[in-house]
Image 1 (cartoon, helix red, strand yellow):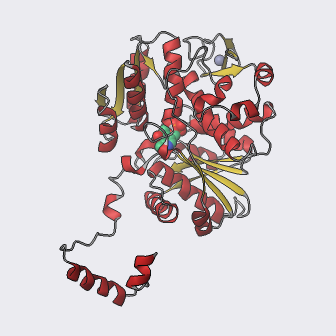
Image 2: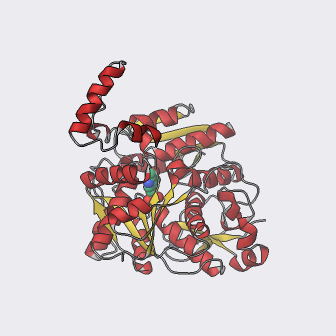
Image 3: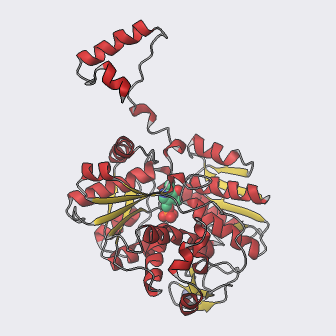
Length: 424
Ligand SMILES: *Cc1c(COP(=O)(O)O)cnc(C)c1O
Ligand SMILES: [Zn+2]
């Protein structure tokens, strides 16, 4: 049973039935799914939801599909990690990491939106699935299409990290590398989408696809016992995730399932920060930029939903900051060294911004904070590799090892005796 009431233009409010249309015919604004919340409140409850399998579809009444899910049966319900060592390092008491770096099956938050987008694509009769991507989306679209046996085209900028190209290629989609940046790829895909009967998950399926991002917000609330965190910090690229987490929190409050208020903060890389620039300038206008940052997965210079990020950040009483590439790398190491989590630069950006907001006093140290860790470091090793402490290379003789270890102890880097070390 579906509780979708229809599509509503985000600009002029015109209503449409939920079909293939994705922009408003009156004003060209984007369309968004609306729901019959009264019906949902009668049909189910948060306690019923809590009994269901641990994947995104446990919130299916709040997702825009008519029939049964087609994919994503292991996607979502990622860990919400209480990060005590990291919290201490940056001056917080209660810090949680929403860890989508281990989302199934392609290790980023994109498995949420793709599971919903492809399920809806099949309902609408699309047989070929496509996307415009900075890398992670292509990985997810390729994987989910493969397991459904669907034809798949992924369009990416030529500069995408090698691991992200391999992470698509292994599923054997048709990869199309475009000489240009993400914004060029996206424009091309809009043109292709208007001429070919293909379901571009983030272009012509965008109203449905983006709804999948709400599940990150639903999960955070549920994992905190249905109390919203006082602060939520999220990365911003095209502007899908942040407004949808805001919508998720509002929906839970509308249904009476969650309590509390969360200020929402946007994080961008300084080398691509058009939304943060507009936020700091106090305008609604977002001026496109040419990206130049190691945070490739969030390097979108002309964000489609940037204005809605601004709206949600302002409406929630939040804020936003940008982090330099150096700050991003430091944050990646800090996260790894304190919590044992290896995240990609998008997540480094978000953590670096969290740190800044605490330093600025915008986030008080004793309040609860959730930071979105949206992607996995193993897919973006290029930027990290130059900064690692060299590993020592030794022969396989114990004598050599002991000689080297003695130099470590002499330099004060090895405080434990050999026997203490061995018995731990
Ligand atoms: C896509 C992506 C984001 C956020 O992008 P939005 O377009 O703003 O939703 C953040 N982090 C990672 C790792 C991503 O792949
Ligand atoms: Zn309109």
